[in-house]
Image 1 (cartoon, protein in one colour):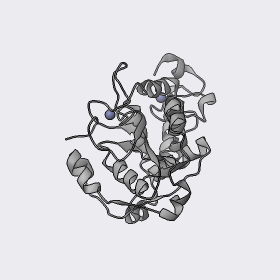
Image 2 (cartoon, rainbow, N blue to C red):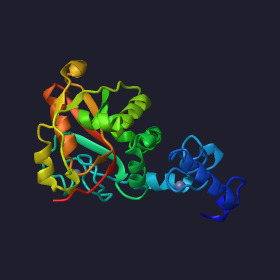
Image 3 (cartoon, rainbow, N blue to C red):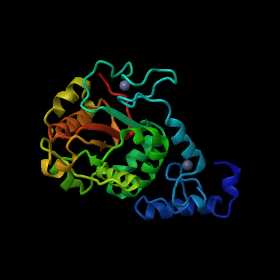
Image 4 (cartoon, protein in one colour):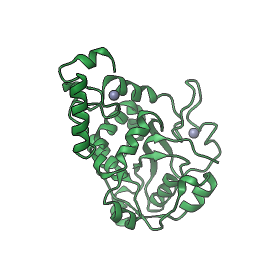
Length: 263
Ligand SMILES: [Zn+2]
Ligand SMILES: [Zn+2]
């Protein structure tokens, strides 16, 4: 924390401690005016955005050049249209992918908070940054609807919350598009984080079915498929294939963080 913030009227050390204690008392909600990432004083004018200038800049800086096909960061002069060294030649179910940036630092921190229902209020903030960082790619997608990756019904019932749906709703609201719950997860999957790329793709095969009736008006149309994190692309690929079997024209996977897959 720099001197400027520490000496502000609500930025004194004692008040900062009070704000943090109040934040914890209110179930992890940040106290108005404090930064969502670093808890420093973000200023009253930033109360709605909830990020201090440093963290916001760090998030937007993370949104550097990325592969159009799999959203992995690439060098500024890389050819991005046909895929990068990581995805070139691999079969992916989606046609393009975009993320704010790599899954570490503040992006990872915010994704972890979004995973619980108490963090649902973060979704519009993250979507604001995504839309600012990836405006060109989103315009190019020219989508007609936003579809969240679905959880298995048992898991959804257990958690009573799906962060992909919170993000999809925020993105739909922001772009003025309908949010369509067009997918059902018909098979639960276990411990995917331990699995390598081949195993993840094998486990996800047939894990989704489409709600054909809900997707009927999207025949041949481009849609945005939303999840929080993209790792090997197995989940978004399986979900995209289910959407395309139901007649959707093309799918752009939209995530907050792009993690590097193993295997
Ligand atoms: Zn901050
Ligand atoms: Zn790629």
